[in-house]
Structures are given as structure tokens and as C-alpha cells.
Image (tube, rainbow, N blue to C red; front, side, top):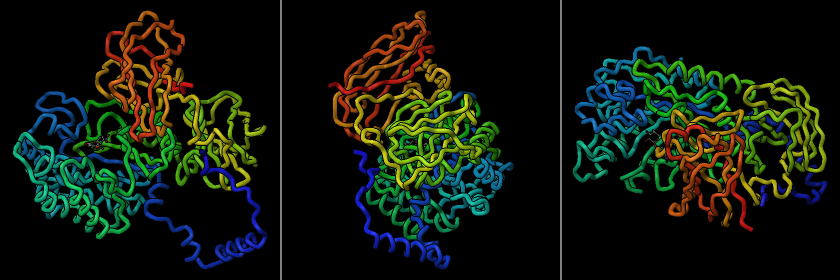
Length: 587
Ligand code: JFZ
């Protein structure tokens, strides 16, 4: 347990110290080339360092923008063709109307820079099959079929290179609703399909075009690998590596072939996840492709929190924008992203290039990232004038506010670190404390490490995955409420990916509600044993927070462990304020 951060206490012989010193001097005095080579990172390490990227879902679906023939279409905007089973011949007509004359590649790259995003992934071809670039392989593309007749992906390749943004393409390798042999379109093509001619005739050669014609790519982002075979996936991957050996491939290529992995969309793991390099694709509202009615934007505070949370657990955040059919990234998205960027401008040191927290820490006050010799405590809820953090074994040399370099008074008693803070946060969202320690590696006390066994673990509602317009997190009361439309998964709270020990746990829930709104029905289950569900009725708590025992669950180390809480809609359910689920070991 916690072995990764256990200090080696063996004495180092003096001769090796001298050797180390000599090597160090040689490296620091040597020519530039040799000092560069120490810094040389693999593409995967570089990717892991950059933390924050811009996802762009842009295609013909931006024209209907969530509405078909005057009717609102529920769900994510880029799925409209399939949701409404729009025939190919009809959907194709959209191309003739696609003329995003306001598109300006420099502005998009500049926005990424302003937001503190270091990479950009744009849909070269989404499930609708329409290529958003100049393709020789299929004329169903932006140059041949639209009045726009420009290649925005080419223009972005230029602007991203100019602004120092790494570049990658989303390519839907298996679903292509335009093609009879690809996955997905069962309304035009109900007959049995053979993916081979599609993969060999379209997917493979199109991915080749992307790798050949757009300079250096950081990654190809495949998605929804249904239907195609392991051999076909492998040929896609090998093709990428042959054409650009440093280009990464994400794990939605399928069959565990990816260089790095994706969590489910919008789903932040509950604990540190360090088995692989990973990324969370996430939405800024509730859609990827532009929908004119979706104004359910996440607030800058929530986004800064999520970025911090993700990075503190070891991941990257790929945050989406959905440009309009005119070529504009919605004004609201821009404003929110620039606010996040302002925070990163000051606090980026505590995000980029950092390692995940060494601590086990589901708590509502702070998050943590590290660099050699440094610990960054991200204070996301201001604790008042003192903050106590336990589990640090290193001697602390100094503590500063990252925002203004001002020293912070602290005391160190055993493994307790007690900071004296001003009564108000320096930053309204996340105030970062930089702690300098006397060693490169953080040494964590037994029991406090991120993989150490715990008697009790809180799963805060704030950290669950939830979406849906009405579901809201309130920073004051630390609760999630607004479950008005449950029965839809987006209105559930779901906690993902927590490498638990195999054991039996009591499950408690903490919530508050007025007595007048008691009586709403709710359910709770663990994904690993779904048939074993708790269903119950919300009891009134006179507005006070109360803890109720629900049931016992068996937890396993399974990676796809998941806890789910849902509230059945009625006229009262919106006001139940859920704070957390607590698991405690059955002793
Ligand atoms: C896919 C696409 O279908 C969607 O349109 C969008 O591009 C998104 C980024 O990716 O949707 C998924 C795929 C996988 C999961 C969730 C949504 N998943 O594994 O949870």
C-alpha cells in the first residue's frame, strides 16, 4: 500500500554521491543537445503533460441544430440523422446549405490559447459520414458538396501550428451512416453488411489522407468501434503508425489497441487512476454538436474544479465546443472558456506537467497535484482561517500562494500541516497553495496514500457524473438537486472507476429535504450487482442534513465499478438535496 511514495531510507555511499554530482555537472555544462535529450519525452508523456484540450464537433448537423422539420429532437445534436432516421438522400441536402462564412481558423486557435488549452481535436468525419476536409476518397466532403469550398481542417492545421496548439482528428471508423456497409444506418440499409469494403475503401484511405496532408498530428481520435473486426482495427492503427510514428491512437479504436484511454463521457473517476494515460471527453453543455436550444452551460467554477479534479487524479480534460453552421463558436462557450483561461494563466503551473495526488482524499475542501519537490494544494472550498492537512511526512520548507507569491504561515506537527489563511479566498474558484518540501518525492504517511485501504469513503454528489438541464450543483450547501426528469440516465448521479478492495460495505446516504417534499422515490445500486437494488422513499429531514443507511453492497476491484443514485420524478423530487453516499466497511 502506498509503496510508490515510500522513501528509501538506505544510506547512499559517498562515492555514488560524487558520481551523481559529476554526471549532473556534465549534463548541466554540456552542449544544448545533451541537455535537450534529458528533457526528451515520448509523445505519450508529452500528451499527458498538456492536460487540457479543445474538442470540436462540427459538421452538417450544425444546420438543423437540434431541430428537424420544426420539431425539437432530444439528445446529442450530432446524432440527429440517426435519431430521426433521416434518409441519406435527405440528409445529404444539408451539404448544399453548409456555408460557414464566418469561420476563422486563427480565432479558433486563439480561443484555445486564451482558454489555456494545449491541444485541439476536431471531427474530420463523424458518424454522419461527411468529411469536413478535402477528401479524394469520397466526394461526400466539404470541398465537393458545399458552397463553402474551403478546407477548414487545413486552415486549422496552419493556425494551430502558428499558435502552438497540438492537433488531432476525430474519425468515426466504424459508424458511417452514409455507407451501406458501415455500422449505424439501419433505415436506409437494413440488409446485412460486410464492413470489409467500407473499411478498406473509405475508412483506411481517409485516415491516410488525414495523416498525409495535415502536417504533424498529435493523435487520431477513433470512436464507437462496433462492427469492425480486431484485424481491421489493427490495420487502421498500423496505418497510422506507418505514416506518422509519433501520432497517438486513442482506445476507442477498440480491442485494447489504443495508446491511451478514454473514460466515459463526462465521467470523472472517483479516485486516482494511474494504470494508463487517460482523457475525459466532456461537454460544455449537454451536446457535442451545436444545438440552438441548449444553453445549459457549465459555470467556469465547475469547469476549473473539474479540470483540477481530473488532473489531480492523473487525467486529461478534452472539453468540447460545438460551432454553429456559420462557423462561430457560441459566444457563451467563448466567454466561459476565457474565464477558465484567466485562472490557468495564473495557476497553470499547478496543472500542466504535474503528477496526480499522492493522497487518498475524497473531501470537499482541497485537491492536490505535485511536481518534484513541490505539492500544490488546490483549495476549492475555502475552509476559513485554518486548513489542516494530514499525511505529509516531508519537511515543508515554504508555503506560498501561487497567485501572488505571498508566504503562508504554517505549522508542522508530526504529519499534520496547519496553514493560517486569510478569511477570504484569493481566487473565487480555486486558490492554489504551493508547498516546497525538502525532498523531490512526496512521502505520505501510512494510511493516507491514494491506494491505501480506508474504513470509510465518501462519494460526494459534486463528483458524480450528472447532466441534464435541471440538475445543479450548489457550492454553498455542497449538494446536488433538481432531479426533475429522472429515469433519464443524465439525471442520475453516477460515480465511476474506483479500484475498491473486495469487501462488503454499508451504504449510507446524506441528504436534506423539507418535510413537505418527503415521499419521493429513489433507487441506488452498484453496477457490479445491478439486480441487488435499493429502492426507498425520501424521508423529511426538516431541512437538516441526515444520514440514512440504505443497504450493504459487495464491492470488487473491477475497473468498471459504478455506483448509481436516481430519484424518480414527481412534483417534489427537484428539491431533495443530495450531498454524498458513504461506504463503510462491514466489520
Ligand atoms: C461518442 C459519439 O457517439 C458522440 O457523438 C460523441 O462524438 C462522443 C464524444 O463520442 O459517444 C460516446 C461514446 C462512448 C461513450 C459515451 C459516448 N462511452 O463509452 O461512455
